[in-house]
Length: 353
Image (cartoon, rainbow, N blue to C red):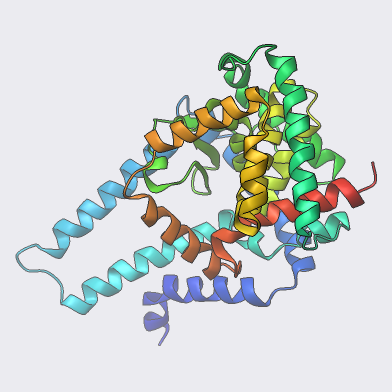
């Protein structure tokens, strides 16, 4: 009996991990995992893998490829194991990766939502409020834009990418400290080769197995600080996409760095415009016609850049990401990103300044 259980250990452990995620109280996860065990994991990763002088995700991909190759060759060898035994071995290996995922990061999906911790109430905003917020954000963006460049010429890339890892990490750490959350001062935020993620319509990701935040280098330069802070927020134990978007916005907004402030307001505006277009296309069209020339130019450059970095395989990334989020307890899937609007709006109007 014990030998049979031992054989099924990884599958059973994966099931237990998922069950624990579903049943453990959020307060328990917050206290004993997110603010205790996970911090130990975070420190361990920052003291080891983080010291590798290039994105560790490359090593992870090579290891996974070699494991898959080994399994594939074994699967088709002359005298293989029985078919179901081979499938069981593969399932067991996948289950092992799932268990490691939960141990290193995944239980953070069960922590207390940030809106509850900060005592803000993200409620649906009306069409009028949405339009007013969009206009106000455009005005904010225009003022920041004039500080960065007085004419309507293209913004210089260097102001967004120079020392971006340190500046972005410091901005996030300041926000987490203000919100009374622990944070990592050594977590790495790195850029991978162009279109490595965007080929699947993904701008960045946090890989728990190596503990670093990664952003595709093909992400438009003025959006990069926001994207990097988003992934660094994941690395600090925040799982919801809306939460990481919210933390990225607040960090950019309060950074005292004009380029980061611009990146935050720009990404916030893109979400606002998308929601406005969905709700009221007439108001959206009218607003777009009245955009300041410099903002209209920036948005046009971003649109063209997106066209140049959009691939037919993009649907696959959305499909997998949507399924992944729903399995881990985020019922709205990729739509969770849009909840950022409600969090930011609530924070701006309810949170004590």
